[in-house]
Amino acid sequence: MQNIKKSCMLDKTMQAPETVGAFQKLPMVMPAMDILSSAKRKARNVTATKGITNIAKRVRNKGAKQLDALMKELAVPLRMYIERFPKKQSLHPYERSLVDLTFGEGIYEEVLKRVDDLRKQLLCVGKQHASLCAQRLEKDLLKGLHKRVQQFARDLSEERQLDSGMDSF
Image (cartoon, rainbow, N blue to C red; front, side):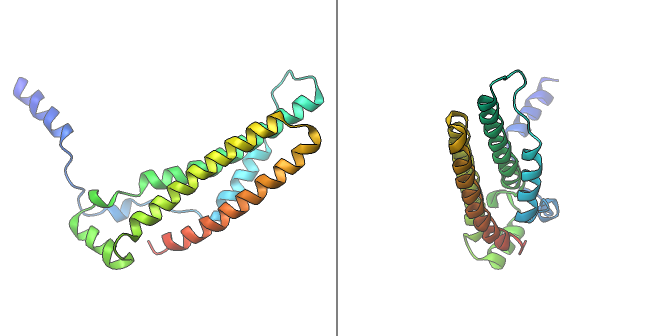
């Protein structure tokens, strides 16, 4: 009985290389415009915290919560793609060579790294602007929102470039 437990523990600690078929498990990558429109729709439905009677505070709270929701809705799909696309080292040797021959050596890892960097940058900018929005006066809210939309437009253009690289999967 103890031998069985020891062998089970050894099996869990030792990771076997992935079998052939990892490409069949790849997630469907949504176009950048679909991710953005879905995030905007969900962020639009966020309301201010109940119980805030001061109108200015309520508007600031709603703006900060909407920006936070927009940031999260944009970052979650990117995180899911990073998690679900397998690491090159865990691929079967046949699939590893197929990736190298299809994309070139190092391109697969570079694209995944760029998606992760975009996600991290998006989270950083989103947190900064949400906190600024919570602190600003009403007249400054529109300026902050305008800057936020411009940043997301830049991020969207970068994501489109990444999507074109990922489309070849």
